[in-house]
Length: 278
Ligand code: G4P
Figure 1 (cartoon, rainbow, N blue to C red):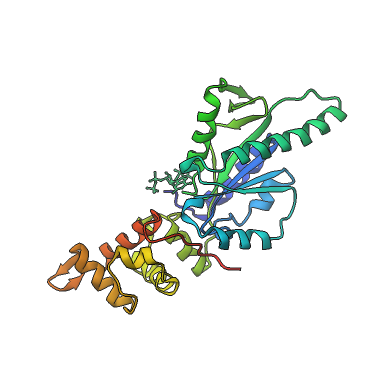
Figure 2 (cartoon, rainbow, N blue to C red; figure 1 turned 90 degrees about the vertical axis):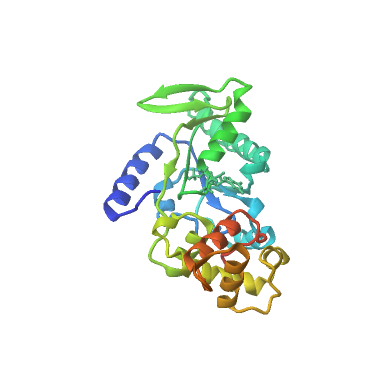
């Protein structure tokens, strides 16, 4: 996964601002489990005044009611459309095409008033790592293959024509996550947007366990045969015992147990959660 040092961030931002000049619509992907924390800190500046379609992906893993409440409270800065999607199961893509149709109609009117010939919108998919950018491009493409998606080159940029309404830049714009805020870092770590290699996994899993214990979802207790009265060290010990993860006799292997907790949380095996609050 990408290591975001300031120089890299600055270069990426400059390049994206240039690319976005060629774009009619930005498809910003966020993680539905962290609808606020999965936002890139400079996204408003990067998108300038282009219409933006925000897709809150991985809906299947989120507490949808909580995520929807949060999304409704956000004050959006400009022309923004949003939708909750689960690209894994192809859920919500019809709504995405509907929004694209609508935005195309709006922009087409503006073009026609200026005497310009209508053409498909040019779009780019952007988002922080692991939110599902590539999966979404593939899903949109799959639907379009039947209607003859074809690649094209304009001004050095590769486009894939997905329909007569949308051409997509073939590679997504990878944005840096919000760093520097410890709680946001924990959420990004728990959901997989920061790679485990650089993650203090025991710290993240401990933070996550506190939430899992508070929320008390049956999937979590059942998965690790817990009775709900354990404290955090006891949960680590029980998981270690159940999965045979020991360093020495009787000493739980905290790193391995933390990775089990994170992996199974990310797979949705411990229930559906939204980690942001508002
Ligand atoms: P990216 O381009 O933004 O970095 O993300 P990518 O599409 O590679 O997706 C990251 C992981 O998230 C992939 O899992 C992908 O299958 C999964 N994913 C994408 N959309 C959804 C969704 O709507 N629901 C669920 N549950 N998962 C989704 P992976 O290949 O197993 O990667 P990883 O988990 O090992 O990181």
